[in-house]
Amino acid sequence: MTMLGWAQIAVFCACIIGITRPLGGYLTRLATGERLLLSPLIGPLERGIYRLAGIRITDEQGWVGYASAMLVFKTLGFLAAYAILRLQAGLPLNPMGQTALTPDLAYNTAISFLTNTNWQSYGGETTMSNTSQMVALTVQNFMSAAAGIAIAMAFVRGITRRSAATLGNFWVDLTRITLYALLPICVIFALVLVWQGVPQTLGAYIDLTTLEGAHQTLAIGPVASQEAIKMLGTNGGGFFNANSAHPFENPTALVDYLQMLSIFALGAALTNMFGRMVGNERQGWAIFAAMGLLFLAGVSVLYASEAQANPILTALGMDGSLGNMEGKEIRFGIVQSALFSAITTAASCGAVNSMLESFLPLGGLVPMVNIMLGEIIFGGVGSGLYGFLLFAIIAVFVAGLMVGRTPEYLGKKIEAREVKLTMLAILSLPLVMLGFTAIAVVLDAGTSALSASGPHGFSEALYAYVSAAGNNGSAFAGLSANTPFWNTTLGIGMMIGRFFVIIPALAIASAMAAKKTVPPSSGTFPTDGPMFVALVLGVILIVGGLTFFPALALGPIVEHFALAAGTLY
Image (cartoon, rainbow, N blue to C red; front, side, top):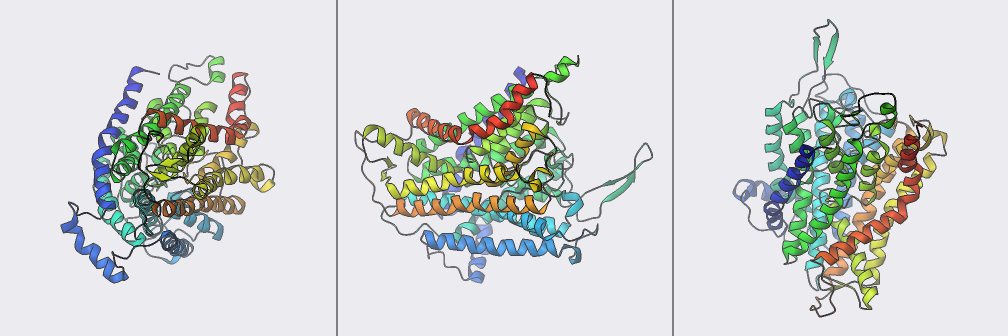
């Protein structure tokens, strides 16, 4: 570890803090339907979409209507993406003649991009045509991100409204988020990426002869446009198999830093939007502080772990002064690899600029724990906020038990129905993560895809289902997941991890919206200060520790001690 390394982490944190409030203010005006700077330019297009689709912006929906609209939209998106992937061979913009995807791989990929997971059981440049990359995948990158933000906005409306029966209009929220937030930022971001050397073309791959006289084919395509929303929308699915370790996706240190900032930008800004909408920005900063402390703890452990050399190599007399450079881009080194990995798993992004399979055991543990906590450390766009607020409800419920009062959050009483729905949402994730892992490590169909034995092989399987249910999409690279068993079970895990959280969250929002606000009293637990931050962090860590520690002990923890004793897997 070096002072320069810590300075890079500090600069990143300072940049995120700096953009949170202005971007949060913009999202607040977007959520409340106010006129925006881009309204004169985009307003006519927005109104045209409403007229064409028969949407009346004044018609709001209850939670059932909002959830139903979201599910219908997702179903249609799945069918469209699946059809494109299955018919890929006969569609235009296929200069390399890519064949159709198998049914199980097309199913897995369509579900993956639909749920904002972007798990990839395929190699992008060797599998997908330009039509598939743009129409099936990039479009879903926009739509899944917009849907996540829409759910967060609906959840916040539920908390702020009094004696209300509606949460907004899903179609209006989806349209406004896409037109006024995602598209403008991504257009600018894509142009910056092209300036820095990221390809953006519909041409065929380039055949060339190297200086050594060998033949090589360079894959190119509409990379920059997909890369922009991949990061901003915390999607993570790369154009290339090597993802953001590929020099065409991530050509310079500046691009690497901008990608990291874009992953956290909207998730951090949504905390400020929350504070503004509830009428107390301190509420938003309290959530930001809790998320930030979890992130700093994770990145510190990860950086400290990877800054150490592999003890096996050190025992053989090799120089370990550079730390564990296995699986890392020399262009980025230890600190930017550790920082990127902590960011991409704290948010539900899943993009990687180094291979997690090659991290030391404790270095691989941190990304896994980040996802296990529920992707609430800034999290995916939207999902991080409403996921964190579910833990906040549990925290105030615990606080109410300790003082013998009916728990309240922002003036709304938390009753049995909200607590039951919250636990349903929170417990659905470990059920999928641990349940499917248990099945995979005892069946030949599961173990045959693992590249390692012992605790490292267990970590490969565990990480895959943690990543799927957590809608992250990153992976331990040693897992060969493109089989019917893995494609099917991972697809099921992605759906449960997405919709079994969203639907209870909307039901909770509806219950909160119907309540009247209770004036604060001397016994009201403050939720905008250090005590609340400490309590909610304690709840998150206790729930996560009790749930996942046994599984972690079988994987990265025991592997850490085995490595120290000289045993490899």
